[in-house]
Image (tube, rainbow, N blue to C red; front, side, top):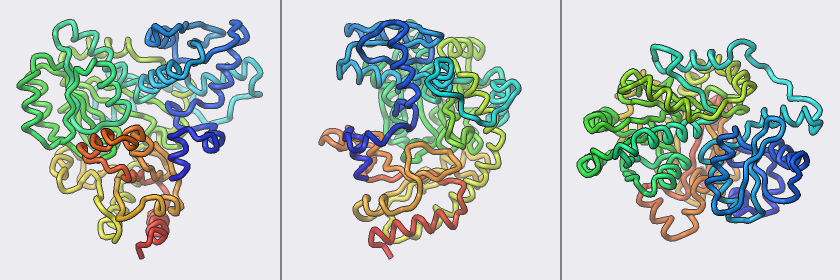
Length: 476
């Protein structure tokens, strides 16, 4: 936990050890090498350089940073943005690329690095050698229960999938007077950030997903202005599920698009299609279970009005997926179904253990009592519970967290279990202020909440590792 805090506070003693991490949060060393090398062919003596997914992303980032001087440029197929070494501009650029999924792919960076002799050769890895994008779209279409792979669009990350959807909806509907958004539940960090930062506060947030009266009031007040309704099944990290049938009925009766993200539990486990116009999914989770690819998907459902129009509008906003990322993902996705089935079974055993464990306070999972009925309406089978849970312990979290011999990290949906002090990593800025802590409390988020993604290790080993943590924390 000391290192978690050190990372958040950018303590040099911690940061010097971090050369890799989740790609939208930690700039990979290959991207840093490429950025530095880009100075030479275009004669940039100083300034911060960001390598981006495309020319459009570079130009939009430069425009976003105005009035700070910034410019987009290209060198050997790589588009980037340079701006003066200014801390505030750096933070703005960093956040924009994080939210939009606009960082250059590490495999694209590796290709550039090989061409210019910065690294000797690309990493050797097993890939799919056929139509990788077609294979991925076909598999996701099958998992979603769709009638055609052409309605599944690929993105270079789950966040770019949401960013592109948000942008398409804003462009198509804002001019028609539909300029308001509704967020139901405390959603993932960047999803919430996009809705807050890029709508000029034209977004209502309802954190209690079971508060029907509050949801209905928003439709009564803003119904004719609502562009989109956004929720997750389940929410991240509180594992809550709204009554999606009721929410979709309200959205459709008022002409708002229903946008649903089932990434936490996986679309393999839940059927949200009948209640969604657009389904978002992070393929970084479960599809890329080795933890070496980030990718995303947008699926436009048969229930969506003007399905082909929305498909085209969103496709036009998506950033390109690097072919080598697609080739690796197409190989990994083959084991999707079997992996999720194993993770579901292991999660059920871990939940059973924690539910009766002294020292556990507030165990959160897809079938927690207050959300069980809503979740089971969507579950494809009652045993498909999703491989994620969260919990608090009765006492200081550091002793438990530090002693638990399991991998620690902010992602999920991997073959590897991951224990994560989620609120510290995602919302440290809120933890450190009184107003922020009040906001977290209003949403039911305890700063000490631990999110646990169950992995593919033998479940007895997982439980034994958790027990070591409990014993260290004084719970025998």
